[in-house]
Length: 611
Ligand code: F6R
Image (cartoon, rainbow, N blue to C red; front, side, top):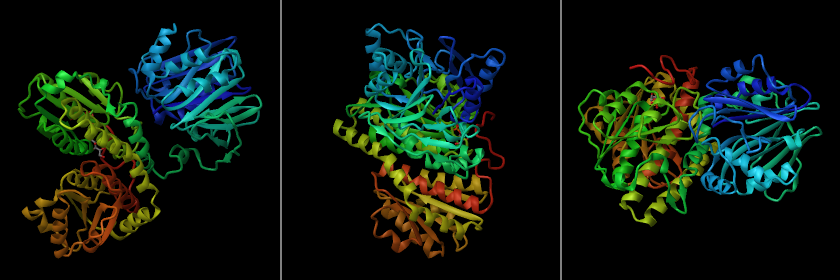
């Protein structure tokens, strides 16, 4: 996730671009840059680090110019350094581009453009756009952009300026957000509304597959598909800037829960070709993969729960034995690893001290170490032999939500890739799972769009927010989901909650069950479903109120549970993704009802860089 901005008008562009970027820093902050047309050339300034570095660099020496674009970066392709920071230029320095999104076919485009004589400076997917537009330019920038984008697969929100058309910014969008702000004799462009609210409240929301031209006479919209003109009235935004940063959501956590379909799509993007997974980024040869005889998954907190889900997937799909451990335990024990062990460290931040120590511990024993992380350039990603990034975008809420879902997706992809290479699943079987993985974003969207379901969860929160203990139970992948449900609830609402493997109840925890302790049972379709039903019976017999998370179409569960939160049906191992969503919402609404600060719960930090 990155942020893009643009300005065209009569004022100096640089201060406006910097100010707009400062409202988008939540979208990424590993480097930033601006390009402004000054005196017949495009002047580009980029800096690594927070936006402040760029502001410092431009403090006493800014381009004099009224047309410019800017970018704050959250690296996806290429390390966070100055060369990879945006804006990117074509070979001639006459075209500058900023981009948010992922160009899936950038390698193929890059090779072709190199063959045509173009010279690349960065490792980014974005730079291909600048060269592509250069290649397509025949006197009309709009046409060059629109033709060039026809060749692009993936997601993008882009802004383009050119010396050949100095009073124009061309922008376009597909699967990445983009808005235009309409002022008096000036126009603005940004990934998100708060970036321009200081200057105008008249906002044109750009839709997918639309191209927008900003020039002296205003803003013109057209279709990227057939070039037809599109008429749309701007909306007048009345929110204050703070709530606008949350796109109208009350809290970052809620916004991030609703961003999960997008996080799933971004994490899937560019990782398969013609029904086969392509994960070159993990830097494991087929020979290495075939030699693996043991997998360790090591992580903390929510990332550990995502790792637990991976255990089920890897064992079932590859038949490689998997051990999973909490990083703070793993780092101090004497595990048995060697160069045939694949050690997967899962960490949203990539900076968790225990997870890093665990990875180093495994490296000392020659294990192949792999990172699953959301932060490009994080210590974990730098020290690992290979990295699979979750492209969830920055997560501001301390409680992990969209990053967990993205971690599960990345882990499923990794597990399936191992199976594909080792041929432990037939090609058709791999394709089927891949298709199902591709459908998970829609399933999560379905839950989030279901007003009735959201209403039920809120009613549940109203009924139980004053309880002091909760039990979460599940089997199979429902077990890590139960652990996550309990963790979410305790960390943001401060209610004591325990997650248990449902079969463990009778070995102790069932002593806690009584009418005052609500039980949440994860009971999606699968080979342990009947067993979970028995566990629901056990707790009901002791007077508990039971809320079940179950698969849509389940006609029986309603006879046993007091409340049922239905989620779309998928295959058993993948069901962790839809099943966790109602539990995130449940803890959110309970915490809100209790008046808690859900984005910054007490005693917690987003990144635990100390032991
Ligand atoms: C819970 C939560 C924490 C983190 C844990 C690991 O909502 O956010 O439990 O999951 O601190 O952090 P990362 O994934 O950054 O290593």
